[in-house]
Amino acid sequence: AVVSTQSTGISGNANAAYSHNFPNTPVFETNLCGLTAAKLGKIMKSDGDEETRHVFVMSPPCQPFTRQGVRKDDQDSRSDSVLYLFSIFPQLPRLPDYFVLENVQGFENSKTRGKILEFFKENGYKVE
Image (cartoon, rainbow, N blue to C red; front, side, top):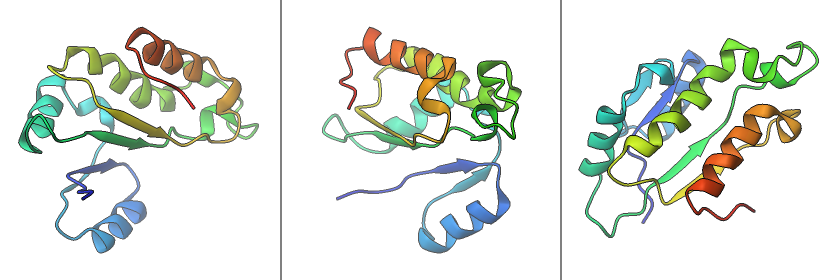
């Protein structure tokens, strides 16, 4: 069974839709940079035992990678949250088992994507 245990986002409308579809899941309207490795580790530990598989479903912000966003990539502060999250994963007692990462337009050739792919490579993940 798949169980959603938490949602974090900065869009009030998206969070409202998520709350509607998953009424028993806590939704935090905040930037991911406010999440510490200790807090994330605690959330993951409370989710189950060693048999529990942790899957992170993520979407990087599109603005840093599009023409309208001036393609600042990792120099755009809106990229900070996804890069921050990948920087705290190694501090966890156990890495997530899987990641599902949306490929927003322009992201496929970005430095941000390159940094995330480097994390995957360093930690033995298979990328498809």
